[in-house]
View 1 (tube, one colour):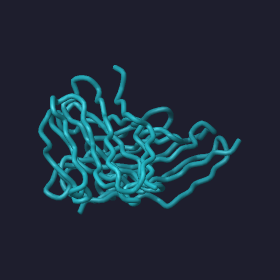
View 2 (cartoon, chains in turn yellow, purple; view 1 turned 90 degrees about the vertical axis):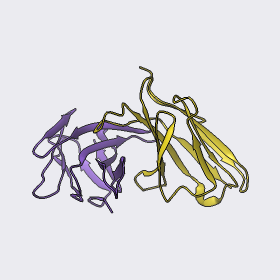
View 3 (tube, rainbow over the protein chains, first blue to last red; view 1 turned 180 degrees about the vertical axis):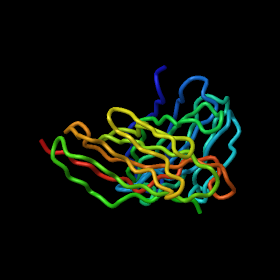
Length: 114
Length: 115
């Protein structure tokens, strides 16, 4: 079990550029979650997948954000036309999808928009 | 909506001191409760959890009891170490119309333990 991995770990971009992050969950975990964490705050839910289906999206997920999990394994989170307010840590988590299960988090991708 | 409230930080203690970090949650549905820890530059690690009322979660000397009557899940440790310095997050997992299938986190409490 190699844990949840995320790439890149750090990303610096200019305002208006598009960025894409990748998350590889623990193998055989059916559920995959994305959260956003700003400095000094707890993580906030963005969206989650059950296998390849995106089942829920937060109001925080504006039209500039899109997430995919095409084969029910890894997931990507894309932000189009980045804004300075998008600067945050983006966390991915996975779980077995059986109900009250524990979510296991990756190390996160820290995004800085200049 | 569903929420989690943690005691304000930061908290600074001397090594071997007793630790309490307060956490209360909204009681919608029957949530599971968690404490996660985040070390500098890293993601969140599960510290302990409890899935129903009166359950006690424990790990690495930390404990928390799921109190339904007070809607609380306070984190305690009898003797902290310098290596416990980190940010601690209380979280609830619940499936309802308001929370969906997600974790809702508190604001986090920064703990610093001095030698």
